[in-house]
Length: 88
Image: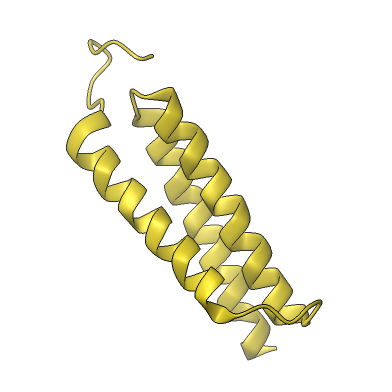
């Protein structure tokens, strides 16, 4: 049960972070890439947990690094902190 709790906890926390980030982002492309990358990472984590198919771990690392990079990019260039900014 404990081995199942950690991936599920990670996915729940990460979807909340993605939701908040997408809500406050100003670039549509960043929003789409964030959601797409999260979906890829989530599917890779679920695949690894249930051992559906054997995939190299580099895919999971690449998706996680991409998601982190998109978050950093969004914080630096696409953040909307108030209602006065223009959302695209």
